[in-house]
Length: 218
Image (cartoon, rainbow, N blue to C red):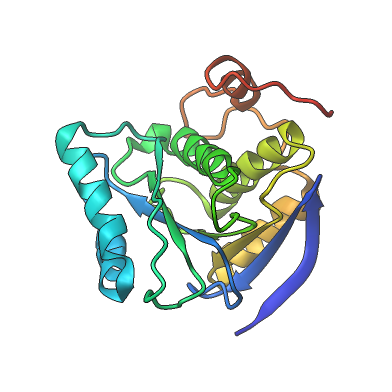
């Protein structure tokens, strides 16, 4: 597996980018993309690898009340028989099926909320999180998708100067890796305006007003 490390440190959080779907290192949480009202095929694959209770819990929840796009749901089942065994939790992010013009907003919100949920003093301490680059935002360019994901991690890191979360591993293919590296090199993961083809969305305003968070650092 090709891996490029030491790309960026966002406040107290390391951001590493790896090639492929597997983080290639021990992680405490892996993010899984979901539909608002049903389990995705990706989640079903994890269910077959020992995470059945996690996936079933999400499925039961959405049958009671569907989620909204941009929501996140943190599973609290630690499965010692899961494969890979070092992944202890799933965080379900509701990104699949979002309207094309809302996909940047959806990915940003979901990743930010997933980071906040992981930043809890759980029995396993979610210090490392694996984030797949492909969260179902097929209307976004690779660079737009990278801005949404990395921008959400950056916003979280600026709010939580210290956090339980210490590292984010972004799992990509070659095209996505190039896009993510470009976004990091150009610092275009912060202070961006409305993305082409996307509805107006002010991430910092959303974080402060909707999530009740305040930025403690510039």
